Image 1 (cartoon, helix red, strand yellow):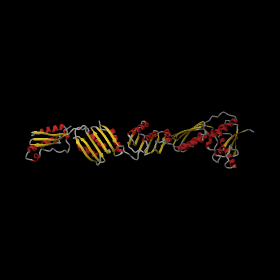
Image 2: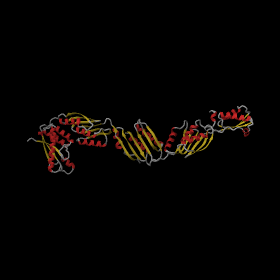
Image 3: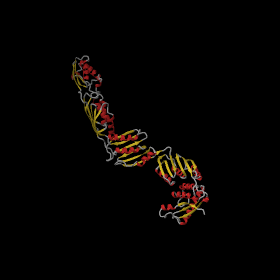
Image 4: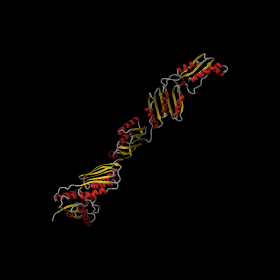
Amino acid sequence: MKLRDWLVPGAATILIGTSAAVLIKSEPIRTDLALRATKELREVGHGWATLHVDGRDITVSGVAPVPEAKADALARVDQVQGVRLVRDAIEIIPEQRPFVIEFARSGANVTVTGFVPFDMAQGAIRESIAASIANAVIDDQTTLARGAPEDFEALTAFAIGRLSELQTGSVSLSERVFEVAGSPESVEAYATLSAALTNDLPANARLARQDVTVPIVSPYLWSANKMTSALVLSGYVLSEEMRAEILAAAEAVTEDLPVYDRMIVARGAPEGVDIAAIASYVFDRLAEMSVGQGELVENALSISGEAATPASYLAVAPTIADRPPDGVVIERAYVLPAMADPYVWSATRQGEDLVLDGYVPNASVHDEIFELATAKTRGRVTDRMAMARGAPRNLLATAGVALQLISRLDQGAASLSGTEVLVSGEAFHEKAKQTIEAQVESGLPAGFTGASSITLLPPAPPISDEECAVLLSAALVADSVKFTTGDDRVNADSFGLLDRLVHDLQRCPTARFEVAAHTDAAGGRARNRTLSQSRAEAVKAYMIEAGIDVDRLVARGYGEAEPLVDNDSESAKERNRRIALTLLQEE
């Protein structure tokens, strides 16, 4: 340490000699000695020294910061030319072990007790406090002492910084050991204080005690925001232990996604609400999302986001609001389907069964497609459709057309990729093949283009007329030909059934059949007979157009005359509305 560093700026100037030596201008020798000795001490930083000149003798007094400063001051005065005798009246600042300083605060009032080193002085402490605490009223009760740690200024700056984060309390420093107690100004101040005590202690310092009151906040908030680049945790937790528990749970479900912790310790959570349990509940759902957020306000929890994949949507959407943690009310919960590119959908016929696969934009479209599929097959419909965004316009209408087309195929399939449609399979007869190909080429909804790969189902082996009758009857028992209500137009859902009947009729090429139509009892006898006759004729016409010889079919309408069951319910009436194919015996 340079001796000039011991000088305190603004310290008292060196006093010279006795009053007589100062006042008597007629004594040039003593005045000259005083001036030269004073100059010598000032130049090397011994401003603490006081000189008393008596003739050519000088007494040096004051309080020296260290023994070396005392010895140097006496030596320098002794070397001044003309000095005869130097008397030592110097005291040395006492050494303190341990070297202690304490800062106590109550609002704007700050009291400082303990010791400060001479080379720092009380003024520097006061300036640091004033810079950290607005409008501080400082009561400095410190005493100068030796024995401070070398980095005492940095240690006290850290202590004053922590004091500024307390509304009331104290920060003490004993050698290099800190103790902190009190109440922070705010939750943000508590967070800053805790982080500093955990991560920013000066080198080789340690924290012996931390007794800081956790602040109470209202409303109590917590949130997890999952982005494509990170998971950000914010809001309040009850303790550092809870923070660690939540961070561990987050890292367990985020894989390589970085987790940013912006949580603050604070009290005030509603009674019975477990923030750690809520965090785990939210993380389980965010794990299935590409982006999303869970937010708690008091005891109300909201969860939203976008599914990572269509399969993720199926996993999280049905249960996103199920079984929330105790004390929590789900205020809002939804997840958007994932984006799909390309957007695909398909329907595959496997015998009488249908398998639906690919994407649909929402539950409404899903249900409508499933209902369409169910109406167009008498077999089982297997649903493998998943929700995804990005569907082309007119997807529902196009899926309806596709289902209609493959309902007329054996082992057929229709697939959509973007706005391109491919239909493949085996048609039951040539007319059906031509109709399906034409529809794929030019009958799709706006915005879609199509291609087809349709072949004819190979002819089945011939069977007897009686076997043919049994086959046709079984088909019409398993399914029924449907018509527009109150009309004779065959419903498109029944085109596939009629195509199969045509294929079966081709196996007994000489057999003649009656096409019999029956109605329920509603509408009157005459009208029902007329309607049934028209419906029988419509079915006959469909089969003739498909290639069945006109002489093989006779159309007859029986109206309500031959019910299968009483017309006392809607299901009974539906059974009575039917088409039957009866083998005609040769006369």
